[in-house]
Every structure is written in structure tokens, then in C-alpha cells.
Length: 145
Image (cartoon, rainbow, N blue to C red; front, side, top):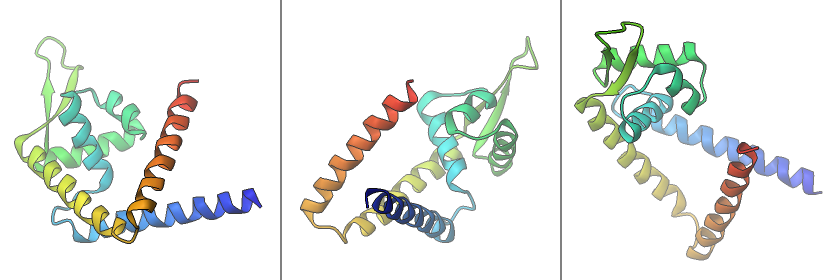
């Protein structure tokens, strides 16, 4: 019975996550996906970085990261910084426009997540937070192995 419930939970979680992504993509006014927003967040939080480092942090392939970077640069949300002494050393950095779009995405995400969680009572939200904390701790511990 436990496996059946776990698979139901996994399936429901996937549906909710996919639904949230579709909701975001259809309604966010800038034509930018969730993964590029994650890249902008990493650049904002940690500063300019090599694309290979970003790919590893975001969990995508270097090829996908090149594609994401190209789109961000083309849209004016990021810029490539070249090292004058070594042209092979290229960093991707967020622009002011990229920071603006990231902040809008973050606010938009908070707004529609808040609407989603309005379906839960305060007690259910507290239980959900406790469950998420346990799962996060387990994921961090698993990833450290």
C-alpha cells in the first residue's frame, strides 16, 4: 500500500509542477522559460559565472546552457564578459534588464503560488512546510553522499 501511495504522490506532484510551469509560461509577459529564470537567479545571487559552472548548478547539459545563454544575451537579460588576457575565459552576467525581468518573475511566481496555497488551511500549510523541510533535508543528505 505504501508504494501505491508514494506513486500517487509522485504523480500528483508532477502534475502540479507541470501545471505551474504551463501557467507561468502562458501568463508571464516576457517570453522566458523557467530554466532561464533559474539562470538569472543564479547570476543575481552568485555573480558572473562560466556557462559550464552554471550548467552544473542548474542541472542541465552544457549544450542546453549555451542555448539558454544565447537567448538571454539576445533578449538583453545577460551579457558575456570576455577576459582580455584569455579569450577562452568567458563569464555570463546578468544585466539591469535581466535583473528587472527576474524580479518580475519572482513576484509573479509568489503571487500565483500564494493563490494555489489559498486552497489549504493554516494547519495544512504548517504540515506541508514540515513535510517539505523533511524532504529537503533528505535530498541534501542524499546529494552529499
